[in-house]
Length: 70
Image (cartoon, rainbow, N blue to C red; front, side):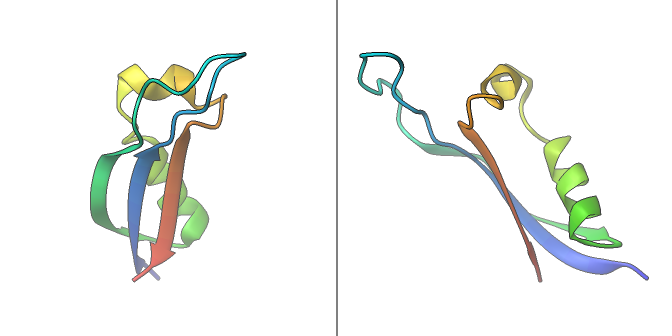
């Protein structure tokens, strides 16, 4: 059975070694509604929507995917 979820993808830059944050936090993907079987499935769908230019920032914890049931 499918359920409805919403997700948002945010970019929260972190300071680099001895440097201040030069970029501002922003929403990369606005609130999006999807049908998924569970929250993990919704998270997988959301992770596929991360813009390509931010993929290398995931490991640093600067890209956040927030999923919630609708």
